[in-house]
Image 1 (cartoon, rainbow, N blue to C red):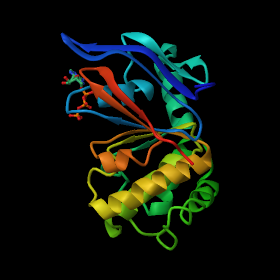
Image 2 (image 1 turned 180 degrees about the vertical axis):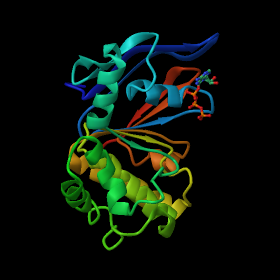
Image 3 (image 1 turned 135 degrees about the vertical axis):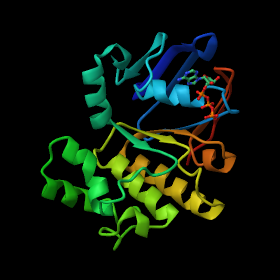
Length: 228
Ligand SMILES: Nc1ncnc2c1ncn2[C@@H]1O[C@H](COP(=O)(O)OP(=O)(O)OP(=O)(O)O)[C@@H](O)[C@H]1O
Protein backbone atom coordinates (compact mmCIF):
# COMPACT_ATOMS: atom_id res chain seq x y z
CA UNK A 1 0.00 0.00 0.00
CA UNK A 2 1.37 3.42 -0.87
CA UNK A 3 1.39 5.86 2.03
CA UNK A 4 -0.65 3.98 4.59
CA UNK A 5 -2.24 6.10 7.29
CA UNK A 6 -1.44 3.50 9.90
CA UNK A 7 1.01 0.61 9.77
CA UNK A 8 2.05 -2.03 12.28
CA UNK A 9 5.39 -3.57 11.40
CA UNK A 10 6.75 -6.77 12.94
CA UNK A 11 4.49 -6.48 15.98
CA UNK A 12 5.35 -8.82 18.84
CA UNK A 13 3.60 -8.79 22.22
CA UNK A 14 4.09 -11.32 25.00
CA UNK A 15 2.27 -11.70 28.29
CA UNK A 16 4.59 -13.89 30.38
CA UNK A 17 4.97 -17.05 28.34
CA UNK A 18 1.89 -16.28 26.20
CA UNK A 19 2.78 -14.90 22.78
CA UNK A 20 -0.25 -12.73 21.95
CA UNK A 21 1.29 -11.26 18.76
CA UNK A 22 4.02 -13.12 16.95
CA UNK A 23 5.32 -10.78 14.25
CA UNK A 24 2.34 -9.13 12.57
CA UNK A 25 2.57 -6.69 9.65
CA UNK A 26 -0.57 -4.75 8.77
CA UNK A 27 -1.45 -1.42 7.22
CA UNK A 28 -4.51 0.68 6.42
CA UNK A 29 -4.94 3.64 4.13
CA UNK A 30 -7.34 6.59 4.19
CA UNK A 31 -10.89 5.46 3.33
CA UNK A 32 -9.70 1.89 3.76
CA UNK A 33 -11.47 -0.50 6.12
CA UNK A 34 -9.91 -3.57 7.67
CA UNK A 35 -11.70 -6.28 9.64
CA UNK A 36 -9.74 -8.43 12.07
CA UNK A 37 -11.22 -11.88 12.69
CA UNK A 38 -10.02 -15.04 14.42
CA UNK A 39 -10.80 -17.46 17.23
CA UNK A 40 -11.01 -16.40 20.87
CA UNK A 41 -7.55 -15.74 22.30
CA UNK A 42 -5.91 -15.48 18.86
CA UNK A 43 -4.64 -11.94 19.45
CA UNK A 44 -7.28 -9.74 17.79
CA UNK A 45 -7.71 -7.32 20.69
CA UNK A 46 -3.97 -7.19 21.32
CA UNK A 47 -3.48 -6.26 17.66
CA UNK A 48 -6.19 -3.58 17.75
CA UNK A 49 -4.85 -2.19 21.04
CA UNK A 50 -1.28 -2.15 19.73
CA UNK A 51 -2.30 -0.27 16.59
CA UNK A 52 -4.33 2.16 18.73
CA UNK A 53 -1.42 2.89 21.07
CA UNK A 54 -3.19 1.36 24.07
CA UNK A 55 -0.75 -1.56 24.32
CA UNK A 56 2.94 -1.07 23.60
CA UNK A 57 4.44 -3.89 21.53
CA UNK A 58 7.60 -5.59 22.86
CA UNK A 59 9.11 -5.24 19.42
CA UNK A 60 8.08 -3.87 16.07
CA UNK A 61 6.62 -0.45 15.56
CA UNK A 62 3.35 1.39 14.83
CA UNK A 63 3.56 4.22 12.33
CA UNK A 64 0.84 6.87 12.07
CA UNK A 65 1.50 8.77 8.85
CA UNK A 66 5.11 7.68 9.20
CA UNK A 67 5.53 8.68 12.87
CA UNK A 68 6.48 5.90 15.31
CA UNK A 69 3.76 6.34 17.94
CA UNK A 70 4.90 3.46 20.15
CA UNK A 71 8.02 5.47 21.02
CA UNK A 72 6.07 8.50 22.33
CA UNK A 73 5.79 9.34 26.03
CA UNK A 74 2.54 8.22 27.71
CA UNK A 75 1.36 11.82 27.83
CA UNK A 76 1.95 12.52 24.13
CA UNK A 77 0.50 9.16 23.17
CA UNK A 78 -2.75 9.76 25.05
CA UNK A 79 -3.06 13.24 23.53
CA UNK A 80 -2.53 11.70 20.09
CA UNK A 81 -5.17 9.02 20.80
CA UNK A 82 -7.73 11.68 21.73
CA UNK A 83 -7.05 13.83 18.65
CA UNK A 84 -6.32 11.38 15.88
CA UNK A 85 -8.17 8.21 16.82
CA UNK A 86 -11.86 7.49 17.38
CA UNK A 87 -13.10 4.46 19.33
CA UNK A 88 -16.31 2.44 19.15
CA UNK A 89 -16.80 -0.41 21.64
CA UNK A 90 -19.26 -3.29 21.91
CA UNK A 91 -21.40 -1.51 24.47
CA UNK A 92 -21.46 2.13 23.33
CA UNK A 93 -20.02 3.31 26.65
CA UNK A 94 -22.01 6.50 26.48
CA UNK A 95 -22.36 8.52 29.66
CA UNK A 96 -25.93 7.78 30.84
CA UNK A 97 -26.54 11.18 32.43
CA UNK A 98 -25.69 13.19 29.31
CA UNK A 99 -27.97 13.77 26.30
CA UNK A 100 -26.81 12.17 23.04
CA UNK A 101 -25.48 15.44 21.60
CA UNK A 102 -23.30 16.05 24.66
CA UNK A 103 -21.97 12.50 24.52
CA UNK A 104 -20.89 13.20 20.93
CA UNK A 105 -19.47 16.60 21.91
CA UNK A 106 -17.43 15.21 24.80
CA UNK A 107 -14.20 14.37 22.89
CA UNK A 108 -14.25 17.89 21.42
CA UNK A 109 -14.70 19.44 24.86
CA UNK A 110 -11.78 17.34 26.13
CA UNK A 111 -9.78 18.97 23.34
CA UNK A 112 -10.70 22.40 24.69
CA UNK A 113 -13.51 23.29 22.26
CA UNK A 114 -16.04 25.45 24.20
CA UNK A 115 -19.22 23.55 25.10
CA UNK A 116 -21.59 25.44 22.79
CA UNK A 117 -19.34 25.14 19.78
CA UNK A 118 -18.65 21.47 20.55
CA UNK A 119 -22.39 20.67 20.76
CA UNK A 120 -22.99 22.54 17.50
CA UNK A 121 -20.29 20.49 15.77
CA UNK A 122 -21.61 17.31 17.38
CA UNK A 123 -25.12 17.93 16.00
CA UNK A 124 -23.82 17.81 12.43
CA UNK A 125 -23.26 14.07 12.79
CA UNK A 126 -26.86 13.26 13.69
CA UNK A 127 -28.39 13.44 10.20
CA UNK A 128 -25.69 11.40 8.38
CA UNK A 129 -26.11 8.67 11.02
CA UNK A 130 -29.90 8.68 10.82
CA UNK A 131 -30.22 10.14 14.32
CA UNK A 132 -32.17 13.30 13.50
CA UNK A 133 -34.43 14.33 16.38
CA UNK A 134 -32.60 12.22 18.98
CA UNK A 135 -30.11 14.91 20.03
CA UNK A 136 -31.65 15.43 23.48
CA UNK A 137 -32.33 11.80 24.35
CA UNK A 138 -30.27 10.21 27.09
CA UNK A 139 -28.64 6.83 26.31
CA UNK A 140 -31.30 5.01 28.36
CA UNK A 141 -33.94 6.37 25.96
CA UNK A 142 -32.19 5.00 22.85
CA UNK A 143 -32.38 1.57 21.23
CA UNK A 144 -29.17 -0.50 21.06
CA UNK A 145 -28.66 0.42 17.40
CA UNK A 146 -29.30 4.12 18.03
CA UNK A 147 -26.85 4.10 20.95
CA UNK A 148 -24.16 2.52 18.73
CA UNK A 149 -24.80 5.17 16.07
CA UNK A 150 -24.32 7.86 18.73
CA UNK A 151 -21.07 6.10 19.69
CA UNK A 152 -19.99 6.21 16.02
CA UNK A 153 -20.80 9.93 15.90
CA UNK A 154 -18.71 10.43 19.03
CA UNK A 155 -15.79 8.53 17.46
CA UNK A 156 -15.97 10.69 14.32
CA UNK A 157 -16.51 14.05 16.06
CA UNK A 158 -12.80 14.81 16.38
CA UNK A 159 -12.38 14.03 12.65
CA UNK A 160 -9.86 11.29 13.41
CA UNK A 161 -7.35 9.68 11.04
CA UNK A 162 -8.37 6.21 12.21
CA UNK A 163 -11.52 4.77 13.79
CA UNK A 164 -11.01 1.62 15.89
CA UNK A 165 -14.07 -0.51 16.51
CA UNK A 166 -13.99 -3.49 18.90
CA UNK A 167 -17.00 -5.78 18.29
CA UNK A 168 -19.18 -2.73 17.48
CA UNK A 169 -22.17 -4.92 16.63
CA UNK A 170 -21.58 -7.61 19.26
CA UNK A 171 -24.63 -6.65 21.29
CA UNK A 172 -27.03 -6.12 18.35
CA UNK A 173 -29.45 -8.36 16.44
CA UNK A 174 -28.62 -9.22 12.82
CA UNK A 175 -30.75 -6.53 11.14
CA UNK A 176 -29.57 -3.75 13.42
CA UNK A 177 -26.02 -5.00 13.15
CA UNK A 178 -26.09 -4.74 9.34
CA UNK A 179 -27.52 -1.23 9.53
CA UNK A 180 -24.87 -0.12 12.05
CA UNK A 181 -21.88 -1.60 10.17
CA UNK A 182 -23.12 -0.09 6.89
CA UNK A 183 -23.20 3.35 8.49
CA UNK A 184 -19.90 2.81 10.28
CA UNK A 185 -18.06 1.87 7.08
CA UNK A 186 -19.73 4.45 4.83
CA UNK A 187 -19.54 7.48 7.14
CA UNK A 188 -15.94 6.67 8.13
CA UNK A 189 -15.02 6.45 4.46
CA UNK A 190 -16.82 9.71 3.60
CA UNK A 191 -14.94 11.35 6.43
CA UNK A 192 -11.67 10.17 4.81
CA UNK A 193 -10.65 8.12 7.85
CA UNK A 194 -9.35 4.56 8.01
CA UNK A 195 -11.32 1.91 9.89
CA UNK A 196 -9.90 -1.01 11.87
CA UNK A 197 -12.55 -3.31 13.29
CA UNK A 198 -12.47 -6.51 15.35
CA UNK A 199 -15.50 -8.72 14.80
CA UNK A 200 -16.57 -12.33 15.25
CA UNK A 201 -19.26 -11.91 12.61
CA UNK A 202 -18.28 -12.77 9.02
CA UNK A 203 -21.29 -10.84 7.65
CA UNK A 204 -20.12 -7.72 9.49
CA UNK A 205 -16.50 -8.23 8.34
CA UNK A 206 -17.69 -8.51 4.72
CA UNK A 207 -18.61 -4.80 4.81
CA UNK A 208 -14.90 -3.98 5.08
CA UNK A 209 -12.50 -3.69 2.12
CA UNK A 210 -10.18 -6.32 3.61
CA UNK A 211 -10.47 -9.10 6.15
CA UNK A 212 -7.50 -10.33 8.08
CA UNK A 213 -7.62 -13.65 9.97
CA UNK A 214 -5.46 -13.95 13.07
CA UNK A 215 -4.49 -17.30 14.56
CA UNK A 216 -2.03 -17.81 17.42
CA UNK A 217 -0.79 -14.24 17.11
CA UNK A 218 -0.06 -14.48 13.40
CA UNK A 219 -1.93 -13.54 10.25
CA UNK A 220 -3.24 -16.78 8.82
CA UNK A 221 -5.30 -15.43 5.96
CA UNK A 222 -5.92 -12.18 4.22
CA UNK A 223 -8.84 -11.36 1.92
CA UNK A 224 -9.02 -8.35 -0.32
CA UNK A 225 -12.47 -7.49 -1.60
CA UNK A 226 -12.84 -5.62 -4.82
CA UNK A 227 -14.39 -2.30 -3.99
CA UNK A 228 -16.38 -0.48 -6.60
N1 LIG B 1 -3.34 -8.22 29.82
C1 LIG B 1 -3.09 -9.50 29.58
N2 LIG B 1 -2.40 -10.25 30.46
C2 LIG B 1 -2.11 -11.54 30.21
N3 LIG B 1 -2.46 -12.21 29.09
C3 LIG B 1 -3.14 -11.51 28.18
C4 LIG B 1 -3.49 -10.14 28.37
N4 LIG B 1 -4.19 -9.72 27.27
C5 LIG B 1 -4.27 -10.79 26.44
N5 LIG B 1 -3.65 -11.85 26.98
C6 LIG B 1 -3.50 -13.18 26.33
O1 LIG B 1 -3.01 -12.98 25.01
C7 LIG B 1 -3.67 -13.85 24.08
C8 LIG B 1 -4.41 -13.00 23.03
O2 LIG B 1 -5.47 -12.29 23.67
P1 LIG B 1 -6.46 -11.31 22.90
O3 LIG B 1 -7.34 -10.69 23.92
O4 LIG B 1 -5.67 -10.42 22.03
O5 LIG B 1 -7.29 -12.34 22.00
P2 LIG B 1 -8.64 -12.11 21.18
O6 LIG B 1 -8.45 -12.78 19.87
O7 LIG B 1 -8.99 -10.68 21.18
O8 LIG B 1 -9.69 -12.94 22.06
P3 LIG B 1 -11.30 -12.72 22.27
O9 LIG B 1 -11.93 -12.97 20.94
O10 LIG B 1 -11.63 -13.79 23.26
O11 LIG B 1 -11.49 -11.33 22.79
C9 LIG B 1 -4.62 -14.71 24.91
O12 LIG B 1 -3.95 -15.92 25.20
C10 LIG B 1 -4.83 -13.90 26.18
O13 LIG B 1 -5.11 -14.73 27.27
